[in-house]
Length: 116
Image (tube, rainbow, N blue to C red; front, side):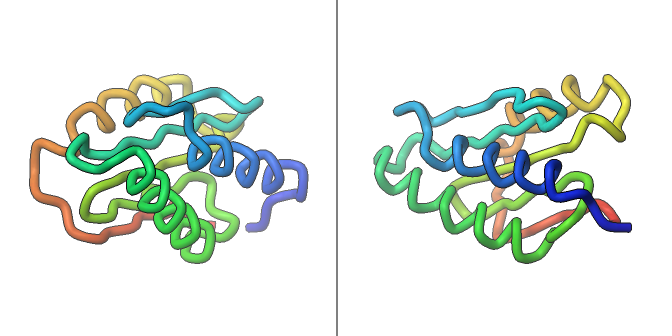
């Protein structure tokens, strides 16, 4: 099942905002029906954080394509988006809880996508 171009454009815009950052190690926001979060470990410089998130975002878009949500974990950073138009309201709560806990374990490169 594919997405319309409006949703895909919002996903791209959300990921670009998260990668561009706000000078912080944790970044998040609502982008219409898109919820997005990104986080880096704090032993990275902010520049390295942005580079890591850029790589993670690129992999996320290529692997998840038109998925309703996707996660990408790299060794030192994490990025996620979810199209809330098709998810229940608990997704926002899930996103924030998950992101706050991801760096308590050793994470190698992993990606997860909803079925498209």
